[in-house]
Image (cartoon, rainbow, N blue to C red; front, side, top):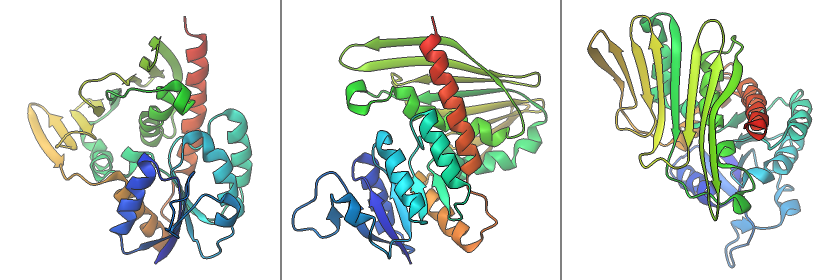
Length: 301
């Protein structure tokens, strides 16, 4: 049984809470949130006392992204295991500090790059060898999401892009790419709408990411074009993964599981077998790319 300290009880915090309640491997000791719920000892709004609880073995950080840095520092200093929502931190200075702290951090740290833990995506990776040499990749991500810039403090792409970037860094770990923005539009009124087209390119392949928080049909789509066929992963559809080879479509994986349930299962497997790698290196690369894209957006004309 892993004792959990849950940080944040908003949209994602409540999802973690529900997943943990159904999992016999975990027990919530305390929940840290902005406002304490009266007559409920499970909740607290006192940060100092929360981090003084000694029997917590795992911190799950599901608070707003602009709070991640301070909570992450405290969790690392306490030398506890960590599961944290993406993005890990919000700027290069914060990343530099966290990288130094992680050098001697021997505990487990997993970042919820949702797709990396989905069985459909894992099946896709296992079948890459069957489609031959990869030359082209397309990712389409987003959904209709009214986004208040003043409330969230980050632009929509900052919350969404870690997902497709994590896939790129996971699939092509040893390759380097030049990053370019082809199209960028934003409308700033009461809510902010973004449409963003990003190209990753090298001598071997071209990868295109299209992101929008104004899509009527939600999409988490990945298509890998190979010499012998294509592989498709779709996080929002009933069919999660399929292969297309010479007019023959093969269903690889269709079962739908909660991303957070998958993440908790990965954590338990990692506890049992320390040889299972966490996504620490991928997370650093994702943030480096995200900050590059942020800079390109600011300079885009």
